[in-house]
Image 1 (cartoon, rainbow, N blue to C red):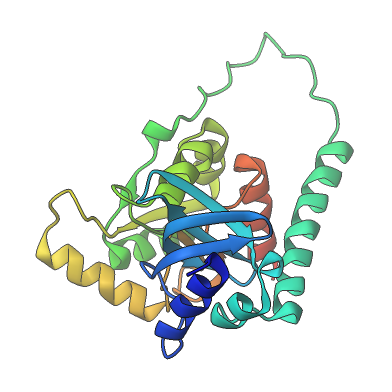
Image 2: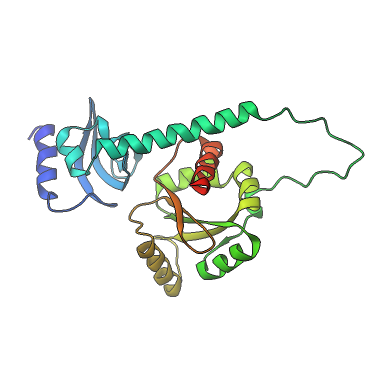
Length: 248
């Protein structure tokens, strides 16, 4: 059985199912690249994120680069994908323009009190109590960021944590603007049953089906925007996206 037939066979087996996290594919062909023993981690409007070779490697690819059968299988919509990519491009451009227009920092005034120490990621408090966090957000005039993740098994979640959420730049922004909620779906570490149930209820409430998914809400719990899957560009791009969500 050649590889193209294998792909079609895999698609035939799963034709009645929608693309989902943990879906298994014997092979996945992207142009001239062929990945075997694939596990789908999440599917966004523009990308599919997956591991291959029994979890030894991880990658993502644009849905527009897949063949027609796979595009149909992953519910690719060129119009929707184009809008999402345009929003990402605009967010990047807005951040770059803001950085260019920002005035040069004035030299430090040594006669004034020293500036506060840099906020580190370890200084942030990620709550697991959504209701209490909403109440705190109302009191402080902040937004709430929910991080739907699988911190002990999801490679793209771990990568995004390391490159964005665990940086001083994000921590400094979050300290001023956000209350943080961790909605963690663990597989290898123990977790309280009540917390598991609460996390699942939040995922159902905000219709989260893949990880990582970052959902920004106001202090009433109304969604302002979301980032589905891994986002390249580090903390600056993610912060620009959060700022765009908050202005909509």
